Image (cartoon, rainbow, N blue to C red; front, side, top):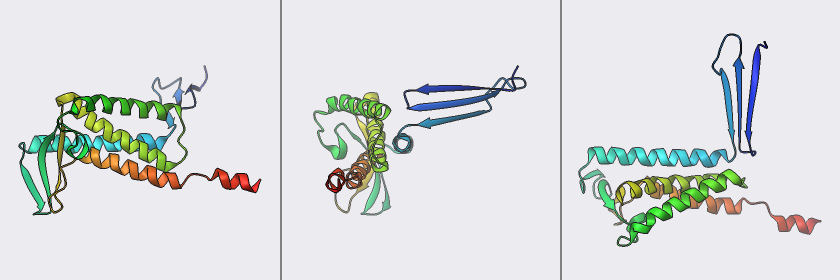
Length: 192
């Protein structure tokens, strides 16, 4: 019997799992490593989703509906509201279809990240943050038909929003930055 056995599981260049097991003394894996394709995409999506879900949970547990806590009086408040529409209260009356849109966007982004390698880190971050935001608001829509919003800037009378909305917008900014970071194929063709 050998001292160590190595098991390699490989799935379409996406996930590589290496498990090293000491066969004589230890029946459990003592070393495992997982490599993910588009790693920044998945990290951004998980961070966005967890932060969004944690803050919404905290608001629901500690606030009454429409309750407001001034952090900077007259400027920035935490105000618990329910939003049946999209980001920043758009489509308030016809928001039933938004749950399916969230699901389609989330499933599409996850499938794309699994099958496609993004060109640069900005694209990975951008699409990851958009996925985290879409999942965060999508979970709310499927669970209750509306989204928990709580960040309110009263100084500029901006609609109340949440971290999922922030992550979607940060994702769009990352994609814009990433669009300037693409390699220039036309300049390479001219040199040849």
